[in-house]
Amino acid sequence: MFCENLKTMRKAKGYTQEELAIKLNVVRQTVSKWEKGLSVPDAHILSKIADILDTKVSILLGSTISDEIDENAVAEQLAKISEQLAIKNRRNRKIWKTIGIILLIMVLFTILLVIFNMPVSKSISTENSTSFIEKNN
Image (cartoon, rainbow, N blue to C red; front, side, top):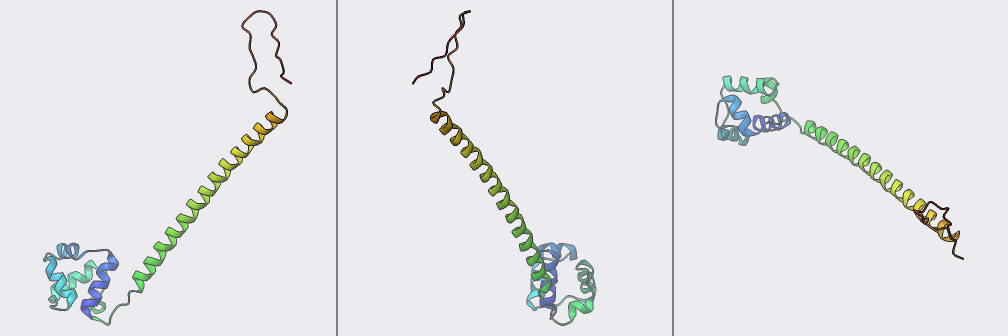
């Protein structure tokens, strides 16, 4: 019981075995032995573990704690990621829609110019006299 509870609560707090060991002034292998059930800490260390993990000693020594906390955290993270992807997809669709509209307007404008046989550029004379623009038929 203690070994599973310690491991579950350590992970829920986001600590590695190494980080917890440093906080308790023990080596990582000691924490590993506790989590494997090969040994147990003395009363003083047990009290420190409870303080670090923000829990009571009785909870650490009690029945097995479910991973429901971890599942809820994972579900929340997945929901956030899903929402961010939806926002990104909406933004991409909006950008592509705008690009499509601009291209469609350009194509329609070009077609109108061709239909009405309008010159794209005008001839400009640098002389002081009046210049004429000829239209090709």
